[in-house]
Length: 81
Image (cartoon, rainbow, N blue to C red; front, side, top):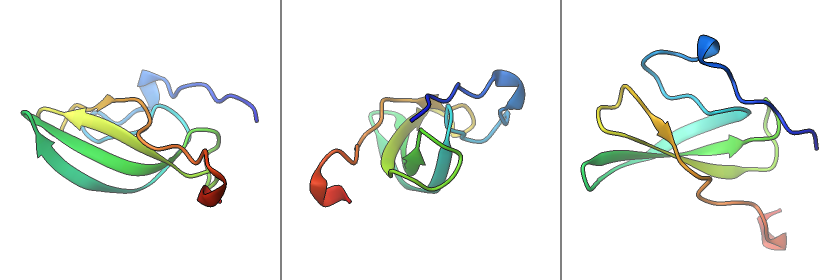
């Protein structure tokens, strides 16, 4: 698989969450913990369409500016197929 480049700042929304690259779907799992909102979402970091499904993770203090965290769950087991 070809490695995708991150989306540059010029093409990112100012006030909404976006992934560093790839495809995002089903942003849910909002939770509040230790002063931050945590967001979990379906994520394919390898393409701009549905594919090997990961679960991404991001945090925010104000729900306007988001910080992308390390991928929370990987499809790395045979039963993930």
